[in-house]
Image 1 (cartoon, helix red, strand yellow):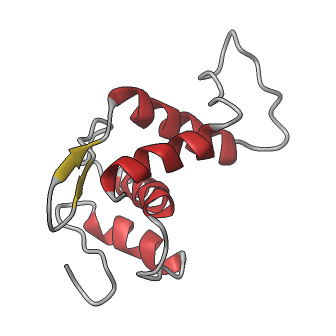
Image 2 (cartoon, helix red, strand yellow):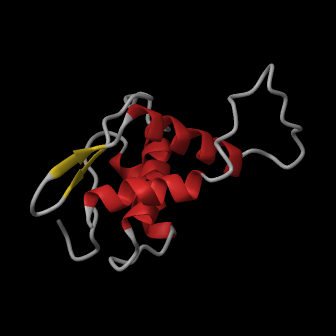
Image 3 (tube, helix red, strand yellow):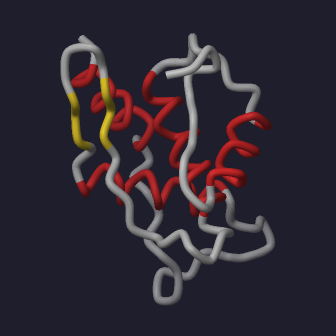
Length: 117
């Protein structure tokens, strides 16, 4: 899309672009990392009051469009929550969103392989 490999539109685009630029994004990053970084940027865009929680995740290539399954989006959300939780907060399964599976990165890589063989 651009020389940087990303762009953003909408009312929260400033937040999303700032996040992507702060991660020192490079086009050579694998799809699984791109998915995580873009998901993180989308969460940053939610700082804008016009941006909601729900989103559709579709990976576009020159040959196809691949929608991310809901269970993969949920897993990615839980991974983000786990990685951004304060180390001073003890996880309480009765009060907090469940943690992602221990192998969430492998599962994300598996989905990425369905996009580009």
